[in-house]
Length: 263
Figure 1 (cartoon, helix red, strand yellow):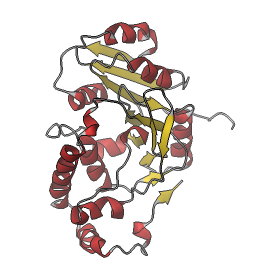
Figure 2: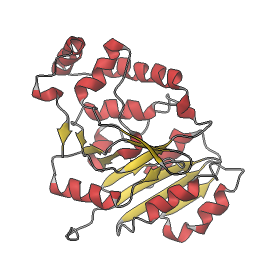
Figure 3: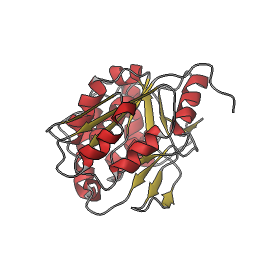
Figure 4: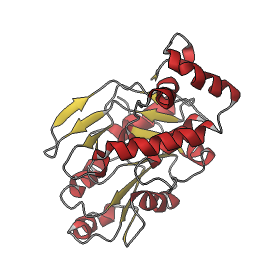
């Protein structure tokens, strides 16, 4: 593909705490993109393993990094985004990876489709040896997302594969809700849906790493927080959205509002 006429600045934030076994692979996956307008911010929570030594190896390529105690992953991400100035934003945890060429793909999609405010790539999972072990079709439109309130199930948006504009971030409050320990991403998506529709691409943008001991393995706790986010968001839904939520249990997808928006 020809180079872009203009490369929008993309801010990527990585939170880390004692992930020395994986963080270098994460750092490389972002920096090796060689994206010309990358603003990469790493917030370490005062790691006691070799994380700080690993991060410092790349400090000349980072916009900012710090290692100091914090109040957990989402607090660290908020700290990073307070320093971010990019037109496009995302975060990638310190055991996950961006896929090769993903930042230029994201920039091109946003540039060629100005109606898009947030975008999800093709959900993917890797193991501890970087081997691809799962890919699945994204089904995260508003209908499937909201129907979980009735059916006690959720259609997940893969956080590491999701990018959004600064304007949407600011409209949605400009912060992650620290009331959540596991599902602040889910709460953020609920707030995004209050303003804009999610678009999906079949391009692979990133991968979630499945490994032993990760917090996300506690799916019961995550779902509990996700349901609380739905309850809170329901109070703010506009009349049209309330009607969609009520009718979601009928499982009818004929309306255009229920279709995945592909790009």
